[in-house]
Length: 407
Image (cartoon, rainbow, N blue to C red; front, top):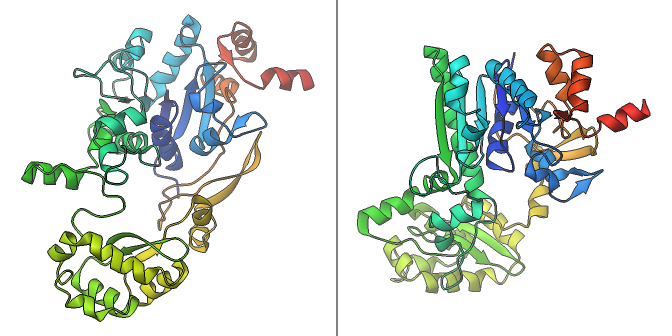
C-alpha cells in the first residue's frame, strides 16, 4: 500500500521552523519534497549547533524525507529552473517576509498562470495583509503579541516564553491542515488555491478557553504557574525529590485522590475543599495541604499511588528523562536513521500510529544542494548543461567539488 501523498510534488521554499515542520509532515505522508535553498548558507537552521561533520543536527531532525536543490533565484537561469519546477508542482510553500516572492516574480499570481491547479501556501509573522502585514516576525514576537507570554510563568513574575517554539509549530500545523484541505478540494474540483497563515494568528487560534472567558465575562488570562484556571487539583505539586502532576478534576477523581492517594478522607468534608468552587477559592491552602503530604515520599511513590487509584498524574521530567522513558521507547518516538554525513543519528519518531500506510521516515535530511544534479536531470537537463550551471554559480552542491576531486 502506498503512502497517501505518494506522487504529490511539493516545492518547499521555507526555512527555519514553521514551514520546514509543515513540509516535513507532508514528506512523512509520502509527498516528494524538493527543498529550494539559497547558497552557500541554505536554510538558516543549517548554522545551528550542535554540528557533526559540519552538518547541523537540529536541521537534520526537521528536514527528513526531503531533497535539496541549491539555486540562485536572482540569476535568470536560476529563476528559469524554479519556474520549470513550479510548473510540475502540486504544492508550493514559502515563508519569506511578505512581498519577497512578488519581487522575485515567483508569487501565486505568476505561478497560477501556467499551473492553475497549484496550491500555494504562505506563512509569515503577521499575515499578508493588515497594518502589520509588511513586518517580519519571529516566534518570540508572536508569543509576546498573542498574549501567551503574559499567561505563562508564575504570578507576579516577568512574562515567560513557552519552552518550545510554540507559535512556529502552530503556524506549521495550521498551514499543514490548510494545504491538506485545499488538496482534498483540488481532488474534487481540479482547482488550486492560495492560502496563508501567520505566527500570530496560528498561536492565537490555540487560546480557545481564554477567548471564551474574555468575551464571556471580560476575564484577562494571567500567569497561573502550572495551575488550571477552571479546575483544582490540576497542577504540579512538589514531592520529596521533584514534582508530580495531578488531574483530579471531577468528583470521582477527587474522592479517589483524597482517600486512596493522600489518605486524607477529611478533605472531602472540609468546607474549604468540599466542591470545585471552594477548591478554586482556597487553591493556595489546598496546594499547601497536598504538598505537605507529598513531601513525605519521592515522585515515583506518588505516581504509583495515582495510577493505582486511577487518578491521572505523572512525573515532571527533564528532557533526558522522557527520552529514556520505557513508554517512549515502546512507542518508537526515538528512531535511528543513517545520515550521509552525520552517520548513525537519532530522529523523533512518528507521533501518529495507524492501521494502514499513513506516514513513514524514508530518507534522512539532505546536505545543501545534495540533489541539485538529480532534480535537474528529472527536468531533462543533460550532464554538460548541468556542469555549466554549476560552473556559472547558478546551482550548488556543498560536497560536489570534494566528490569530483576525490574521484
